Length: 141
Image 1 (cartoon, rainbow, N blue to C red):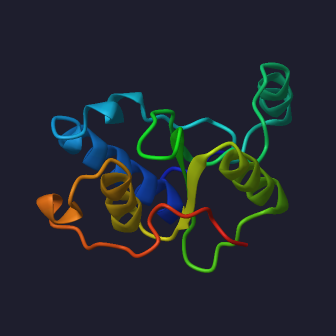
Image 2: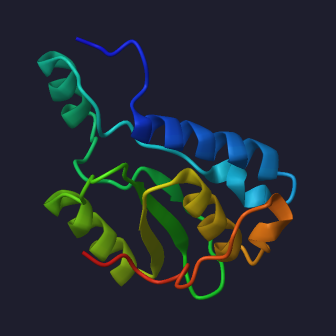
């Protein structure tokens, strides 16, 4: 059964991609930001089909495969409330970090937006956002 309304986590992700739509003129690399449909509730037949198509469990919510500084890409896992990173998600974050990706777990779209700005050396205050310390360090469990 599908939900009529997006979850809080989905709302943060929708807000983040709306921010990307606004910020793309300042940060053109945001055109390459994407989400993989690896989460959520699906009919078993759809889940099987997605697995056959190569969808992997635990892939971070937001990927931007664009180099910046010492990193080759930015990966963000969005959580809400008391949401925790699963074993599969942490495995992906660790693997990407070992391949020089900047990886993060965040609980708010504004934090993810500020991290994205900092990743691309754009002052988050340009968009009315706060700076976050450690914005280019690998996620910790």
